[in-house]
Amino acid sequence: MKTHMNVPVFIPHLGCPHSCAFCNQKSVTNVQAAPSPESVAFSVGEMLSTRGGRTAEIAFFGGSFTGIPRKEQEAYLRAVQPFLKRGEAESIRLSTRPDCIDPETVSFLKAYGVKTVELGAQSMSDRVLRAAGRGHTAEDTKRASALILEGGLRLGLQMMTGLPASTAADEEETARQFVALGAQDARIYPTVVFRDTALFALLESGAYVPPTMEETVERAATCLSVLEAGGVRILRIGLQETETLGASIAAGAYHPALGELVRARTFRNKLEEAVCKLQKDAIFVYCGEKLTSLVLGQKRENFLYLTEKYHIKIQLNRTEAGCFVTDGQTTIPIGKDEKYD
Image (tube, rainbow, N blue to C red; front, side, top):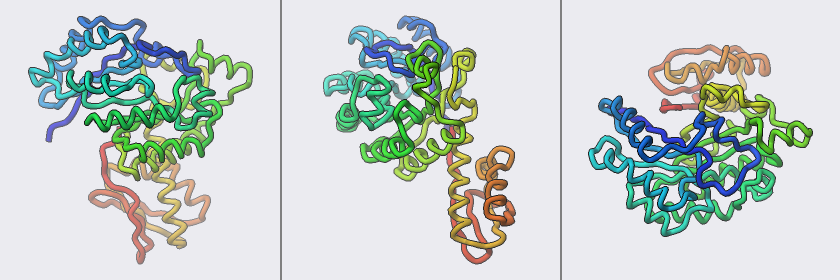
């Protein structure tokens, strides 16, 4: 079976007419200036030379691609066309703002081999969007999502947790609306506070208090469960680590393995639900090798939490794949093998 590789091209802050409270794209991407089309073609070629038998997708991230002047969009897209024509890459993915999509733009992107558009929706609450200085509305996200799907493109939606004025209920509702909008892919980005941002000023003044790591993991886990139950593929949870990222963060729940922590929490929640249904003094957890670390949690914290809270014994046993819980009479499935980021 062929594996897949992403070929990222970062264009920090290009095309974005707003300065969101949380945004410092240069720190997030570790790219200080926008690349030229020629340098994009060179770097993409270098990365594709290592693909072997893998399929590949070229991904423009970091800015609002469709907010760039059309001539510049075209220059970037033209620069990577040879890789599509030679079959070295199968498609193009890009990210943009919900208010930078219209029918003509969708047709333009399709003509250049773009197959997926990700929208930086961040929240489906207008109150939260205003507090974060996003400059677009939830209705913009609904309209843009419909246009992308009607145009035959794949829809990705990105959300954030822990934004100013955002509650756990707001974030769960955002995840539910993503499902209703027909999102096929999603990313969950818990808010971190970067220096030299409006959010940093709010932090220093005491007007913004970031959620704790515990709150962040629980809130993201709830959103993850809603999205996955709705058939949405989760591409990433948390920011990707770069050389400069850690030094730029002033506060917030940043962790290089945040995705693992959140996924492990979803399994803890499923285990707890099963324990409550079984109501026994001892239960048996059968788990395949691929899921073991998520079921146990870091330092076996999932099992420790359950044994201390419910005063039960939990025995871990191996099975070929998936995961289920039993008390010897009743069996409850809680997970299946999947490819996690």
